[in-house]
Length: 453
Image 1 (tube, rainbow, N blue to C red):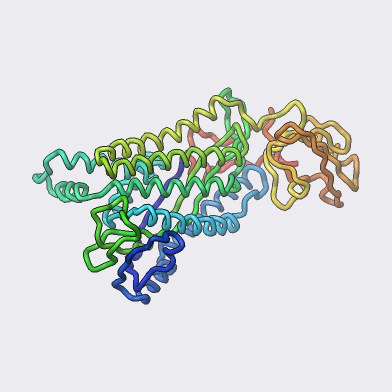
Image 2: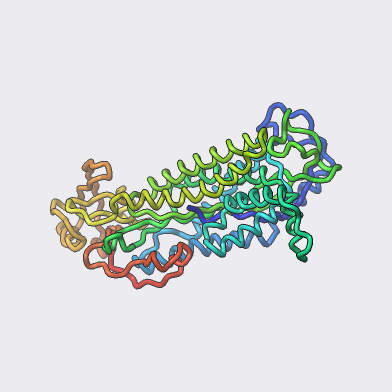
């Protein structure tokens, strides 16, 4: 379902005096003793923006969208997405998402151990070697919780060098707040997916179930979501509670610090059966249900700890179920971006063109141009030439309603509307999904296709 939620610790900081920004989140703040000074806090936040990992993530996101643009040019001889604008949007939306992760984690009382984050990251990297989607922390946190349970009932292994050390680290881990953190991150990811609404999606041509080439959309987005988490520390750091019963997911913790870290949240999916917006809405809904379910199981495990195994299993198989459920829904529905007997169906709209200006959207069907019926892509050019100064079109919306649009025609470009039409019987080049992973799709070299109008 998703490419992954990545976590790297950058800077450990403690706070000074009081933290007034928490008053906007929790009115019943009772006591929060501060052991460090404001300069320490300022240094920690400044170090975040000068840390090379922050810019490494930025470069990674930009290169991802640039490869996506190159694929669009190879397929359609046109740029549909702007890498710079997509990166700016990823940073802007990600900053909001990171703030919400920080506030929600703090408000729910999620306090983690710094060493557990490193274990989580290591497990995620190992799992990513098996499948790229396993990079998501849902899998790593679930496996860590299961391994932790095993270390509680099986005697430690002391005769194997190195294994006893790893065994002890896993035994001392606290997977419950990590599972709660995973739930919070997926909750915010669902919000980002819904907010983005498939705006970063790119059209593709793929081979359908019966060997027919159909249109599809690749939804593959990343957001830079820097977050601040409470971490358990030795006595002498922050002490006290934000409200009675805090922290909820690590009640044995007494002293806390703040860990400032960049996180990258991302997801990937593909649809042949619906528009990118509708697919994004569906993905967001499923992610929301998954996150709420996992968070509820974590809350129950606070009162009855053996339920953490149920939460771990749900984190693993529930996340996998999201992936297979999406594939099942795609298989049971008919392809959406295929030729229509009623007219020329629009696969995509190139930004800055007259098609975008007059409000043509993907999935709509152009029925008439200048009063002339059009059934195939080849019918568009003669129909556009029927009126050298003006263009009137009848368009069938996705809801089946007829709308009328018009635009002026300028000399030299009257034959280009700026639309990408669905593949027809003459389409030969497509993306081979059987050979390529989602990442490889972006790198794959394809010949340019004459599919515009």
